[in-house]
Image (cartoon, rainbow, N blue to C red; front, side):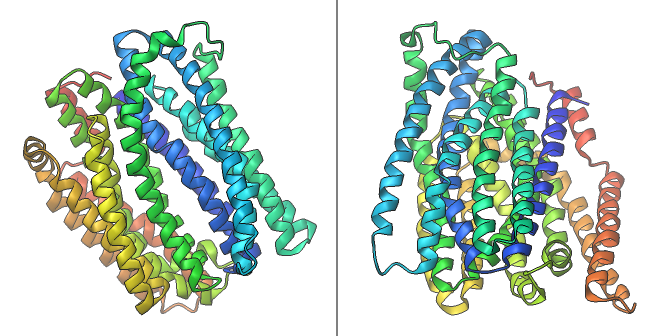
Length: 519
C-alpha cells in the first residue's frame, strides 16, 4: 500500500470516528432539546464561531499557510519551517484575541436593541459565550496544517474526537442535572470551550514532539519573504472562504427568520450529508493538498495533474454511492439516528425531503471542495474567489425566492442549485490540458460506477418493499433496513468495481508502476 493511500486511510478512519461521535453528540442534543427554539439558538450561536474557524483556521489561513510552509520545508528544511511557524503562531494568537474583543463589543451593541426577538437574543448570548472556542479552534487548525505539511495526519484528525467526547459527557451531565433546556445549554457551552481547548492541545503536543518550540530564537526578518508570500495568498483566499461560509450563514439566518424549527431541520440534514463529505472528501483533500502544493512548487505539471486525478477518482468512487444510499434510505437513517427523546417521527418526516435534496448536492460539494484546493495549490487564488462571489449572490437570490415558495425546503433547494452551478463553474475554469488528462483518467470509471449505483438503488428499494411485509414497528423496520441493506448494497457495489478491475488499491498500484510520484 502506498504512503499516500495509508495517509488517506488513517485520516479516513479517525475522521469516521470523529463523525460517528459527532453524530452521537447531535443525537443527544436533539433528544434533549428537540427541534426547538433552544436547539436552533444553539446551532446559530455555534455557527458563527465555526464560521471564523473555517475562515481563520482550516479555510483561508490553512490554504495560504500550507503552500508557504511546504515551500520552506522544500527549499530549506523542517527546522527552518518550524522556526517560521513560531513567529507565525505568535502573531495569529494576538490577532485572534483582538478579534474576539471586537466581536464581544459588537454583540453588546446588538443585545442593546429592545425589539430583538427572544430567539435572536439567545443566539447572540450563546455566540458570546463561545468566542474563546473560536481562538482555540483556529489555532488548532493552524497547528494541524503544519503537521499535515510534514506528513503527520493522525493527531490532527483525531483531535475532533476529543471535542465530541467532551460534548457527549457534558450533555449527559446536563440531562442528569434536570435543569431543563437552559441548564443543558449552559453545560453544552462549557463542553464546547473545554473540548476546543483539548482539540488545540493534542496537535500542539504532537508538533512539540517533532522539535517545535515557541522560543523565537531566529530573527523574524529572516522570514519576511515567506510572510509576504503568505499575505499575498491569504487575502484572496480569505475573501473566497468568507464567501463560502457566509453562504452557509445566510441560509441558517434566513431559516431562523422562518420559525423555531427550520434551523434544526437544516442542521440535521447537513450533518448527515457532511458524514461522507467529512469522512472521505475532507480526508482526501487533507492528504492530497500538501502533495499538490509540493508538485506544483517543483514545476512538474504532469505530476501535479496526476495527483489531482488520483484524488478525483477516490472522490467519485466513494462519494457517489454514499449519496445514492443516503437518498434512498433517508427516512430509515433519520429514524435510527435521530428519532429519540424530544425529536419525534413528525420531525423525521419534516427532515426527510431536506436530507434528500442535500444528498443530491453531496457529489457537487465534494468535487468543488477538491477543485478549489487544486486552484489554491497552484497559487491561483483569484479565480475561486470570483466563483464564490457569484455563487453567494446566486444562492442568496435563490434562497429568498424559493423560501417564500417552499419555506425551509426552498432553502435546501437553493443550496442544491448553487452547488451544481459552483461545480460547473469550477470545472469549466480548469485548463484544457487538465481536462484532457481527466477525461482519459476517468473514462474507465463511468460504466462500472453507473452499474454499481443502479445495483445500490435496486437492492435498497426492493429490500424496503420486502421488509415491509414483516410485522415490524417503524423503529425496528428502520433498524433492520439500515443494518441489512447498507452492507448488502455496499458489498454489491464494490463487487461490480472489482469485476471491472476498478478499486482504490489497484489504481494506486497502477499509478506507481507507470509514474511514481514522490511524497
